[in-house]
Length: 395
Image (cartoon, rainbow, N blue to C red):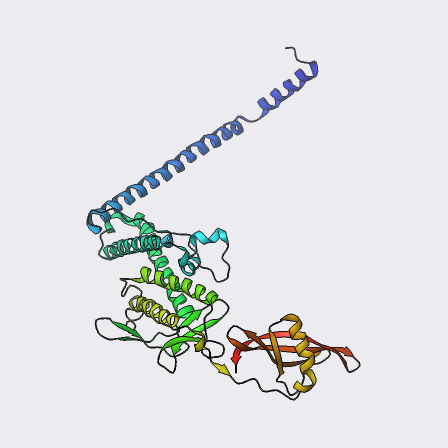
Protein backbone atom coordinates (compact mmCIF):
# COMPACT_ATOMS: atom_id res chain seq x y z
CA UNK A 1 0.00 0.00 0.00
CA UNK A 2 1.41 3.48 -0.88
CA UNK A 3 1.46 6.13 1.83
CA UNK A 4 0.08 9.57 1.18
CA UNK A 5 2.81 12.25 0.94
CA UNK A 6 1.57 14.02 4.12
CA UNK A 7 1.63 10.74 6.06
CA UNK A 8 5.20 10.10 4.90
CA UNK A 9 6.23 13.48 6.18
CA UNK A 10 4.73 12.90 9.63
CA UNK A 11 6.45 9.53 9.94
CA UNK A 12 9.79 11.10 9.04
CA UNK A 13 9.40 13.81 11.69
CA UNK A 14 8.54 11.20 14.35
CA UNK A 15 11.69 9.19 13.52
CA UNK A 16 13.83 12.32 13.77
CA UNK A 17 12.43 13.18 17.23
CA UNK A 18 13.02 9.67 18.48
CA UNK A 19 16.59 9.67 17.28
CA UNK A 20 17.12 13.12 18.81
CA UNK A 21 16.24 11.91 22.37
CA UNK A 22 19.29 11.14 24.56
CA UNK A 23 20.45 7.56 24.61
CA UNK A 24 20.61 7.64 28.41
CA UNK A 25 16.90 8.41 28.61
CA UNK A 26 16.05 5.48 26.36
CA UNK A 27 18.25 3.15 28.38
CA UNK A 28 16.76 4.51 31.60
CA UNK A 29 13.24 3.61 30.48
CA UNK A 30 14.37 0.15 29.50
CA UNK A 31 16.04 -0.19 32.89
CA UNK A 32 12.84 0.75 34.73
CA UNK A 33 10.83 -1.80 32.77
CA UNK A 34 13.39 -4.51 33.51
CA UNK A 35 13.53 -3.52 37.19
CA UNK A 36 9.71 -3.65 37.51
CA UNK A 37 9.69 -7.11 35.99
CA UNK A 38 12.36 -8.32 38.39
CA UNK A 39 10.70 -6.65 41.39
CA UNK A 40 7.29 -8.09 40.49
CA UNK A 41 8.80 -11.53 40.12
CA UNK A 42 10.64 -11.18 43.41
CA UNK A 43 7.53 -10.11 45.31
CA UNK A 44 5.53 -12.89 43.70
CA UNK A 45 8.12 -15.50 44.60
CA UNK A 46 8.34 -14.18 48.17
CA UNK A 47 4.59 -14.32 48.56
CA UNK A 48 4.44 -17.82 47.17
CA UNK A 49 7.22 -18.92 49.50
CA UNK A 50 5.36 -17.45 52.48
CA UNK A 51 2.09 -19.16 51.47
CA UNK A 52 3.93 -22.43 51.03
CA UNK A 53 5.50 -22.06 54.44
CA UNK A 54 2.13 -21.28 56.03
CA UNK A 55 0.50 -24.23 54.29
CA UNK A 56 3.28 -26.51 55.43
CA UNK A 57 2.95 -25.21 59.00
CA UNK A 58 -0.82 -25.71 58.93
CA UNK A 59 -0.41 -29.23 57.64
CA UNK A 60 2.18 -29.96 60.31
CA UNK A 61 -0.05 -28.45 62.98
CA UNK A 62 -3.07 -30.57 62.01
CA UNK A 63 -0.84 -33.65 61.93
CA UNK A 64 0.18 -32.87 65.50
CA UNK A 65 -3.45 -32.16 66.48
CA UNK A 66 -4.60 -35.47 65.02
CA UNK A 67 -1.75 -37.51 66.47
CA UNK A 68 -1.02 -35.89 69.83
CA UNK A 69 -4.27 -34.10 70.73
CA UNK A 70 -7.19 -36.00 69.19
CA UNK A 71 -5.82 -39.53 69.51
CA UNK A 72 -5.70 -40.16 65.77
CA UNK A 73 -9.17 -38.76 65.05
CA UNK A 74 -9.99 -36.09 62.48
CA UNK A 75 -11.08 -32.62 63.54
CA UNK A 76 -14.88 -32.67 64.11
CA UNK A 77 -17.20 -30.80 61.76
CA UNK A 78 -17.64 -27.07 62.43
CA UNK A 79 -21.35 -26.32 63.17
CA UNK A 80 -22.69 -23.04 61.78
CA UNK A 81 -23.30 -21.75 65.30
CA UNK A 82 -19.52 -21.67 65.85
CA UNK A 83 -18.63 -20.47 62.35
CA UNK A 84 -17.80 -16.90 61.39
CA UNK A 85 -20.64 -14.64 60.26
CA UNK A 86 -23.01 -15.70 63.05
CA UNK A 87 -25.26 -12.88 64.28
CA UNK A 88 -27.68 -12.00 67.08
CA UNK A 89 -30.82 -9.93 66.70
CA UNK A 90 -32.18 -7.31 69.06
CA UNK A 91 -35.23 -6.49 66.94
CA UNK A 92 -38.07 -8.52 65.49
CA UNK A 93 -38.91 -9.84 63.06
CA UNK A 94 -35.53 -11.13 61.93
CA UNK A 95 -35.03 -10.55 58.18
CA UNK A 96 -35.23 -13.75 56.12
CA UNK A 97 -31.73 -13.11 54.80
CA UNK A 98 -30.30 -13.35 58.35
CA UNK A 99 -32.20 -16.35 59.71
CA UNK A 100 -29.72 -18.99 58.51
CA UNK A 101 -26.96 -17.64 60.78
CA UNK A 102 -28.94 -15.82 63.48
CA UNK A 103 -28.73 -17.52 66.87
CA UNK A 104 -31.54 -15.39 68.37
CA UNK A 105 -33.95 -16.60 65.69
CA UNK A 106 -32.74 -20.17 66.14
CA UNK A 107 -33.33 -20.16 69.90
CA UNK A 108 -36.78 -18.56 69.78
CA UNK A 109 -37.97 -20.76 66.91
CA UNK A 110 -36.74 -24.14 68.11
CA UNK A 111 -40.33 -25.42 68.04
CA UNK A 112 -40.06 -25.38 64.23
CA UNK A 113 -36.91 -27.49 64.16
CA UNK A 114 -37.25 -31.30 64.32
CA UNK A 115 -35.89 -32.87 67.49
CA UNK A 116 -33.48 -35.07 65.49
CA UNK A 117 -31.89 -31.95 63.98
CA UNK A 118 -31.53 -30.33 67.40
CA UNK A 119 -29.83 -33.47 68.77
CA UNK A 120 -27.51 -33.52 65.75
CA UNK A 121 -26.60 -29.88 66.41
CA UNK A 122 -25.93 -30.68 70.06
CA UNK A 123 -23.57 -33.51 69.07
CA UNK A 124 -21.67 -31.24 66.67
CA UNK A 125 -21.41 -28.43 69.21
CA UNK A 126 -20.07 -30.80 71.88
CA UNK A 127 -17.56 -32.45 69.54
CA UNK A 128 -16.13 -29.21 68.13
CA UNK A 129 -16.04 -27.42 71.49
CA UNK A 130 -14.24 -30.30 73.23
CA UNK A 131 -11.73 -30.73 70.39
CA UNK A 132 -10.98 -27.00 70.44
CA UNK A 133 -10.59 -27.12 74.20
CA UNK A 134 -7.98 -29.91 73.90
CA UNK A 135 -6.08 -27.92 71.27
CA UNK A 136 -5.99 -24.79 73.42
CA UNK A 137 -4.77 -26.82 76.40
CA UNK A 138 -2.06 -28.34 74.17
CA UNK A 139 -1.08 -24.84 73.07
CA UNK A 140 -0.37 -23.90 76.69
CA UNK A 141 1.91 -26.94 77.05
CA UNK A 142 4.00 -25.80 74.05
CA UNK A 143 3.06 -28.59 71.64
CA UNK A 144 2.94 -26.17 68.69
CA UNK A 145 5.87 -23.95 69.71
CA UNK A 146 8.26 -25.45 67.16
CA UNK A 147 5.99 -24.42 64.30
CA UNK A 148 6.63 -20.71 64.76
CA UNK A 149 4.20 -17.87 64.18
CA UNK A 150 2.36 -19.47 61.26
CA UNK A 151 0.04 -21.30 63.68
CA UNK A 152 -1.05 -18.14 65.53
CA UNK A 153 -3.86 -17.34 63.09
CA UNK A 154 -5.25 -20.88 63.32
CA UNK A 155 -5.12 -20.91 67.10
CA UNK A 156 -6.77 -17.47 67.14
CA UNK A 157 -9.63 -18.79 65.00
CA UNK A 158 -10.12 -21.70 67.39
CA UNK A 159 -10.41 -19.22 70.25
CA UNK A 160 -13.01 -17.28 68.23
CA UNK A 161 -14.98 -20.49 67.66
CA UNK A 162 -15.04 -21.05 71.42
CA UNK A 163 -16.23 -17.47 71.85
CA UNK A 164 -19.13 -18.06 69.44
CA UNK A 165 -20.03 -21.20 71.39
CA UNK A 166 -20.18 -19.16 74.59
CA UNK A 167 -22.22 -16.47 72.85
CA UNK A 168 -24.78 -19.06 71.75
CA UNK A 169 -25.22 -20.46 75.26
CA UNK A 170 -25.36 -16.90 76.56
CA UNK A 171 -28.32 -16.35 74.24
CA UNK A 172 -30.04 -19.41 75.72
CA UNK A 173 -29.38 -18.07 79.24
CA UNK A 174 -30.86 -14.69 78.27
CA UNK A 175 -33.97 -16.32 76.79
CA UNK A 176 -34.57 -18.39 79.90
CA UNK A 177 -34.18 -15.41 82.25
CA UNK A 178 -36.31 -12.92 80.32
CA UNK A 179 -38.99 -15.14 78.81
CA UNK A 180 -39.34 -18.13 81.11
CA UNK A 181 -37.86 -18.06 84.63
CA UNK A 182 -37.15 -14.81 86.46
CA UNK A 183 -35.16 -16.41 89.26
CA UNK A 184 -31.55 -17.53 89.56
CA UNK A 185 -31.93 -19.12 92.99
CA UNK A 186 -31.06 -22.81 92.89
CA UNK A 187 -30.62 -25.31 95.70
CA UNK A 188 -28.53 -28.47 95.42
CA UNK A 189 -30.29 -31.33 97.19
CA UNK A 190 -27.21 -33.50 96.78
CA UNK A 191 -25.33 -34.88 93.76
CA UNK A 192 -26.34 -31.82 91.74
CA UNK A 193 -30.04 -32.54 92.13
CA UNK A 194 -31.11 -28.93 91.63
CA UNK A 195 -34.30 -27.31 92.92
CA UNK A 196 -35.44 -23.91 91.64
CA UNK A 197 -36.49 -21.45 94.34
CA UNK A 198 -39.17 -19.22 92.87
CA UNK A 199 -41.94 -16.86 93.94
CA UNK A 200 -45.32 -16.14 92.28
CA UNK A 201 -44.69 -14.12 89.15
CA UNK A 202 -41.32 -15.73 88.37
CA UNK A 203 -42.48 -18.69 86.26
CA UNK A 204 -43.50 -16.88 83.07
CA UNK A 205 -45.84 -18.25 80.41
CA UNK A 206 -46.34 -16.29 77.18
CA UNK A 207 -49.79 -17.05 75.77
CA UNK A 208 -51.75 -15.87 72.73
CA UNK A 209 -52.76 -12.35 73.77
CA UNK A 210 -51.78 -12.48 77.40
CA UNK A 211 -48.90 -13.26 79.73
CA UNK A 212 -49.55 -15.71 82.57
CA UNK A 213 -47.50 -16.88 85.49
CA UNK A 214 -47.72 -20.15 87.39
CA UNK A 215 -48.52 -20.27 91.11
CA UNK A 216 -50.38 -22.42 93.62
CA UNK A 217 -54.06 -21.71 94.25
CA UNK A 218 -55.84 -22.02 97.59
CA UNK A 219 -56.12 -25.77 97.07
CA UNK A 220 -52.36 -26.08 96.65
CA UNK A 221 -52.58 -26.86 92.92
CA UNK A 222 -50.59 -25.06 90.25
CA UNK A 223 -52.61 -22.91 87.87
CA UNK A 224 -52.27 -19.91 85.56
CA UNK A 225 -52.58 -16.35 86.87
CA UNK A 226 -52.91 -13.16 84.86
CA UNK A 227 -49.63 -11.24 84.90
CA UNK A 228 -51.41 -7.88 84.62
CA UNK A 229 -54.06 -8.39 87.33
CA UNK A 230 -52.53 -11.18 89.46
CA UNK A 231 -55.90 -12.94 89.38
CA UNK A 232 -56.54 -16.59 88.66
CA UNK A 233 -56.85 -17.04 84.90
CA UNK A 234 -58.05 -19.53 82.32
CA UNK A 235 -56.00 -20.26 79.20
CA UNK A 236 -58.11 -20.37 76.04
CA UNK A 237 -57.53 -22.82 73.21
CA UNK A 238 -55.48 -20.16 71.40
CA UNK A 239 -53.47 -19.57 74.60
CA UNK A 240 -52.80 -23.29 75.00
CA UNK A 241 -51.57 -23.55 71.41
CA UNK A 242 -49.01 -20.82 72.07
CA UNK A 243 -48.02 -22.36 75.41
CA UNK A 244 -47.41 -25.74 73.75
CA UNK A 245 -45.06 -24.07 71.27
CA UNK A 246 -43.17 -22.45 74.14
CA UNK A 247 -42.88 -25.81 75.88
CA UNK A 248 -41.40 -27.26 72.69
CA UNK A 249 -38.81 -24.46 72.61
CA UNK A 250 -37.77 -25.01 76.24
CA UNK A 251 -37.65 -28.81 75.83
CA UNK A 252 -35.23 -28.39 72.93
CA UNK A 253 -33.17 -25.90 74.89
CA UNK A 254 -32.88 -28.72 77.42
CA UNK A 255 -31.50 -30.99 74.69
CA UNK A 256 -28.85 -28.38 73.83
CA UNK A 257 -27.93 -27.96 77.52
CA UNK A 258 -27.97 -31.59 78.63
CA UNK A 259 -24.65 -32.90 79.95
CA UNK A 260 -23.00 -29.47 80.28
CA UNK A 261 -21.59 -28.62 83.70
CA UNK A 262 -18.93 -25.96 84.33
CA UNK A 263 -18.13 -24.88 80.75
CA UNK A 264 -19.85 -21.50 81.14
CA UNK A 265 -18.74 -20.66 84.67
CA UNK A 266 -17.63 -17.04 84.89
CA UNK A 267 -16.92 -16.72 88.64
CA UNK A 268 -15.38 -19.15 91.12
CA UNK A 269 -18.33 -18.67 93.51
CA UNK A 270 -20.96 -19.30 90.83
CA UNK A 271 -20.31 -22.79 89.48
CA UNK A 272 -22.34 -25.13 87.31
CA UNK A 273 -24.14 -22.32 85.45
CA UNK A 274 -25.09 -24.44 82.45
CA UNK A 275 -25.96 -27.44 84.59
CA UNK A 276 -28.36 -25.27 86.58
CA UNK A 277 -29.73 -23.77 83.39
CA UNK A 278 -30.55 -27.27 82.16
CA UNK A 279 -32.34 -27.95 85.46
CA UNK A 280 -34.41 -24.80 84.93
CA UNK A 281 -35.66 -26.07 81.58
CA UNK A 282 -36.82 -29.33 83.14
CA UNK A 283 -38.47 -27.63 86.13
CA UNK A 284 -40.24 -25.02 83.96
CA UNK A 285 -41.69 -27.65 81.64
CA UNK A 286 -42.91 -29.68 84.62
CA UNK A 287 -44.56 -26.70 86.36
CA UNK A 288 -46.24 -25.33 83.24
CA UNK A 289 -47.46 -28.78 82.23
CA UNK A 290 -49.06 -29.20 85.66
CA UNK A 291 -50.77 -25.81 85.34
CA UNK A 292 -52.09 -26.82 81.93
CA UNK A 293 -53.51 -29.99 83.47
CA UNK A 294 -55.32 -27.89 86.08
CA UNK A 295 -56.59 -25.31 83.58
CA UNK A 296 -60.36 -24.87 84.02
CA UNK A 297 -62.80 -21.92 83.82
CA UNK A 298 -63.29 -22.26 87.57
CA UNK A 299 -59.77 -20.90 88.07
CA UNK A 300 -60.88 -17.45 86.95
CA UNK A 301 -60.99 -15.05 89.89
CA UNK A 302 -63.52 -12.21 89.77
CA UNK A 303 -63.03 -8.81 91.35
CA UNK A 304 -65.58 -6.25 92.47
CA UNK A 305 -67.02 -3.92 89.84
CA UNK A 306 -64.90 -0.76 89.41
CA UNK A 307 -66.10 2.13 91.57
CA UNK A 308 -67.84 4.93 89.68
CA UNK A 309 -66.37 8.44 89.87
CA UNK A 310 -68.13 11.79 90.09
CA UNK A 311 -68.28 12.16 86.26
CA UNK A 312 -69.96 8.77 85.77
CA UNK A 313 -73.53 10.03 85.97
CA UNK A 314 -73.11 12.77 83.34
CA UNK A 315 -70.94 10.84 80.85
CA UNK A 316 -72.00 7.20 81.21
CA UNK A 317 -74.79 7.16 78.60
CA UNK A 318 -72.69 8.76 75.84
CA UNK A 319 -69.61 6.62 76.65
CA UNK A 320 -71.74 3.46 76.61
CA UNK A 321 -73.18 4.33 73.18
CA UNK A 322 -69.67 4.88 71.82
CA UNK A 323 -68.41 1.58 73.29
CA UNK A 324 -71.37 -0.43 71.96
CA UNK A 325 -70.89 1.00 68.47
CA UNK A 326 -67.38 -0.48 68.50
CA UNK A 327 -68.12 -3.80 70.25
CA UNK A 328 -71.52 -5.51 70.46
CA UNK A 329 -70.38 -7.58 73.48
CA UNK A 330 -70.21 -4.46 75.68
CA UNK A 331 -72.76 -4.54 78.54
CA UNK A 332 -71.90 -1.46 80.55
CA UNK A 333 -69.46 1.40 81.10
CA UNK A 334 -68.06 2.78 84.36
CA UNK A 335 -66.41 6.21 84.40
CA UNK A 336 -63.97 6.17 87.33
CA UNK A 337 -62.67 9.77 87.02
CA UNK A 338 -63.81 12.38 89.50
CA UNK A 339 -62.40 15.22 87.38
CA UNK A 340 -61.30 15.87 83.81
CA UNK A 341 -57.60 15.57 82.96
CA UNK A 342 -57.05 18.73 80.94
CA UNK A 343 -54.47 19.06 78.17
CA UNK A 344 -54.50 22.86 77.63
CA UNK A 345 -55.68 23.92 74.17
CA UNK A 346 -55.88 20.26 73.08
CA UNK A 347 -58.49 18.15 74.91
CA UNK A 348 -59.79 16.93 78.26
CA UNK A 349 -59.82 13.24 79.18
CA UNK A 350 -61.72 10.88 81.50
CA UNK A 351 -60.92 7.31 82.42
CA UNK A 352 -62.92 4.20 83.21
CA UNK A 353 -63.82 0.70 82.04
CA UNK A 354 -66.06 -0.96 79.50
CA UNK A 355 -67.74 -4.09 80.80
CA UNK A 356 -68.08 -6.73 78.12
CA UNK A 357 -69.23 -10.32 78.15
CA UNK A 358 -67.32 -13.35 76.95
CA UNK A 359 -67.52 -17.11 77.51
CA UNK A 360 -66.14 -16.81 81.05
CA UNK A 361 -68.32 -13.97 82.30
CA UNK A 362 -68.04 -10.19 82.54
CA UNK A 363 -64.68 -8.56 81.94
CA UNK A 364 -63.67 -4.98 82.74
CA UNK A 365 -61.30 -3.46 80.18
CA UNK A 366 -59.57 -0.09 80.68
CA UNK A 367 -60.76 2.72 78.41
CA UNK A 368 -60.52 6.48 78.12
CA UNK A 369 -62.70 9.10 76.43
CA UNK A 370 -62.06 12.74 75.57
CA UNK A 371 -63.54 16.00 74.34
CA UNK A 372 -61.40 18.06 71.94
CA UNK A 373 -60.87 21.76 72.65
CA UNK A 374 -62.83 23.91 70.18
CA UNK A 375 -61.64 27.36 71.35
CA UNK A 376 -63.32 30.03 73.43
CA UNK A 377 -63.41 27.75 76.47
CA UNK A 378 -65.65 25.23 74.67
CA UNK A 379 -65.18 21.49 74.01
CA UNK A 380 -66.61 19.17 71.37
CA UNK A 381 -68.56 15.93 71.73
CA UNK A 382 -67.30 12.99 73.75
CA UNK A 383 -65.32 10.47 71.70
CA UNK A 384 -63.24 7.34 72.25
CA UNK A 385 -59.63 8.16 73.17
CA UNK A 386 -57.65 5.08 74.13
CA UNK A 387 -57.53 1.47 75.38
CA UNK A 388 -55.56 0.63 78.52
CA UNK A 389 -53.55 -2.49 79.30
CA UNK A 390 -55.48 -3.60 82.36
CA UNK A 391 -58.39 -6.06 82.17
CA UNK A 392 -60.00 -8.40 84.70
CA UNK A 393 -63.17 -10.36 85.33
CA UNK A 394 -65.80 -8.88 87.60
CA UNK A 395 -68.59 -10.35 89.71
